[in-house]
Length: 89
Image (cartoon, rainbow, N blue to C red; front, side, top):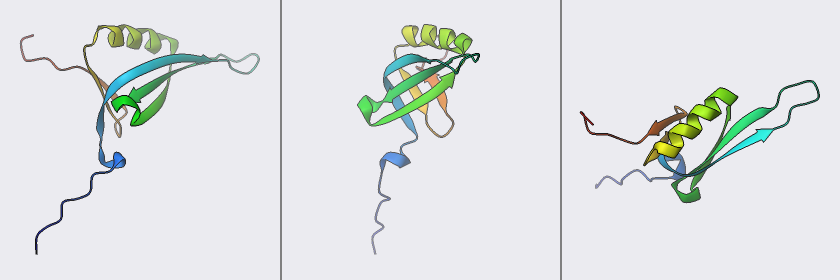
C-alpha cells in the first residue's frame, strides 16, 4: 500500500518569513511602567505573533529590522533570524 504523505497544516510550519512588523507601547496601571510589544506579521498574514519586549530590546530590534533584507521567525523557539549570509560575507 502506498504511503500517504503527512498533511501540511499551518501549525506544522515552524519557520516563517517576516512580512511586516509594528511596535506598540501599552500604558501600565497608575504608578507602574508601560510595556512595549512587537507584533510580527508572518508570511503575508498567515501567522501573527506578539512579543513583549523591553525598551532597550525594542531599540535594538528596530535597528536590526531596518537593516535586514530578510527576517525569519522560528515559532516554537520564539527566535528572530536576520537574513542569511554566505560564509565570508
